[in-house]
Each structure stands twice: as C-alpha cells, then as structure tokens.
Length: 132
Image (tube, rainbow, N blue to C red):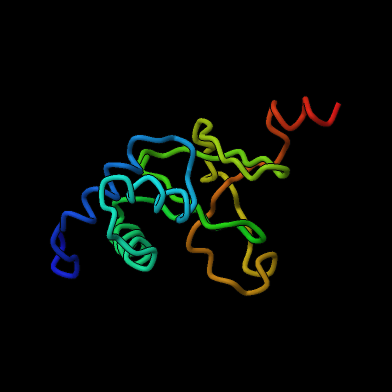
C-alpha cells in the first residue's frame, strides 16, 4: 500500500471482501447490512470511513451520480455502467472508449477536463415489465 494508505484492518478487509462478492453496486446501507453479519459491533460511520479510504486508495470505485445514492464497485477493470432510473440499480456494461472525444475549452466552459465517464440511464427489465 502507498505511504498515505492505512494498513488493511480486519474491518476494512471484510468490507472489501463483502463488496467483492457482489456485482450489484451496493449503497453504504446495503454494505453495512452485509458486513454487520460478520462484524455485529461495526458502526455505519466506520463503514463510511473505510469505504472512503478504500476508494481514495483506488481499491474500489465510488459511483456518484447527480440525484442518486452513492454506490460502490469492487470491479476496478475498465467498464461503464447502465443505471435504472426507476429502481436505481446499476449494472456493468463493456467499457465505452471516450478517448476520441475532442471537446474544446470553450465547449467545456473553461473547465480543464480531468476524467470522462459514460453512464447510460434507462429502465431495467424488471421496471420496464412493471410499467407495461
């Protein structure tokens, strides 16, 4: 681990293990519920702090989309996401290469582009079926 990283505590290891077992991109509350089975005395604040530290150290990804709950992903291989606008579930999809984008500073309102992510919004099969 980098010098700025903390050691891998038992709590952090179990949080990472539980997150790695799922591909549902769980919220903090969902991760807390999963981890609480193995660590009954863990607090929600501890889960938040450890998830933030794991994300800061690039061991997991923090998925933050405007207007939706923060979710976490243990899959650090390049990939994109599709999100259901009805139930909020997030699924992995193959990586969408954004390197061909050529946006000028004017088009970006003077922003210095640091990262481009692609997320597709839609309705999952379950929500689509309920709507019909």
